[in-house]
Image (cartoon, rainbow, N blue to C red; front, side):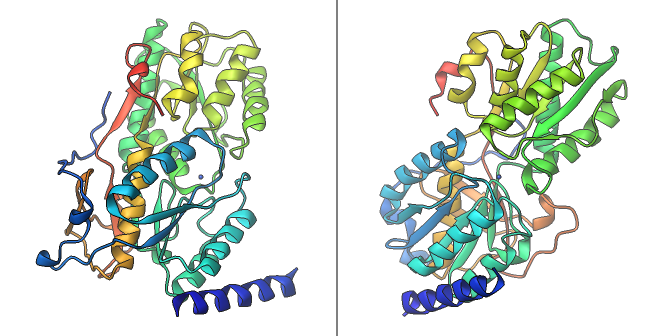
Amino acid sequence: MKKVFALAMALCMAMSLAACGSSSSSAPAASTPASSAAESGASSTGIKSIEGKTVAFIPKLTGNAFFEAANNGAQKYAKDWGITIDYMGDATASVSAQVAVINQAVAAGVDAICISTVDAAGVSDALKNATDAGITVCTWDSDANPEDRGLMVSQGTPEVLGKMLVDMSVAGLKDRGVDPAKDEVTYCWHYSQATVTDQNSWQVAGEKYIAENYPNWKNVNPDNYYSEQDAEKAITVGEAVLEAYPDIDLVICNDSTALPGQLQAAENKGYDKSKVTITGFASPNAIKEYCNNGTLYNWGLWDCGVQGGMGCYVAAYLAAGNTVKVGDVISIPGIGDCEVLPNDSISAGAATADTNNGVVLLPEDTVYTAENMNDYNF
């Protein structure tokens, strides 16, 4: 019945559209129970099983190393949990493309959607329509409007991740002989776009941390540089940064497309880690070559495979009819116990509904250097 209703909703939306023409930090640790399909739904505890549920797993864009690794991890967990994860996305990180994918998931009659949004406001109506069709909506990596989803699986609070970006910058500056506490440090931010909720919140928190701890630093372009998660544009924007500010000390790339693009731009322009400090967030495999080349000292990320799995699990968990509130703990087989936090833990002033609304955090984040990068393969 849900599939029939979902298809009808999708057809209505399509007609409407035709008429109108995204070392460890201090994030909380989690215990890790043994993984088994049976644990995904224990009737003796009143928890409804997630087995048999289908989750549409939607990235900001396909073809990006971060999102592909997240899907690989989620698929491995899905086998243990007895659920189906349909990885559905588009190669372009645009609102229109992501809305089309959401509508496709609705038409397919999935039980739940787990999405990393390109633009929270831009996909709001589509997510509301999915909810109206009886589909549970959760988010991971980059949030929707809190009222448009159930649970958000976050890689950390803005304060934790903003500080992590600055701390990695400090380590990289020290590695090339710059005193971050005393020397004037010129810097800028290069990431996808200001509408991407997660990255923008980290930049804001990072700026606050810099102002409080490194008043000698100077942001040479407070409007930031944006490359819209386009790999080629990330290189050209990265080159533009170095052309505009050839003596810049630091470029912070809190985006998994911007970081390799900025590093490639540095190599194209003859820079290495002795001339400029570049750091940010990206998967280990996407950056190892640049580290081997001596282009950067460090970078960081979290286990995106775990995050993808967690996002799909909590989406299936709510779709199965389970109810949670702030303070409750969800035990995710193979990953650990995750406490439900209020929405304002990652977004200042955000309200939280009484039930089935809130945030869960990943267990930890990691800083990569030449010493440990080969210990990871994603």
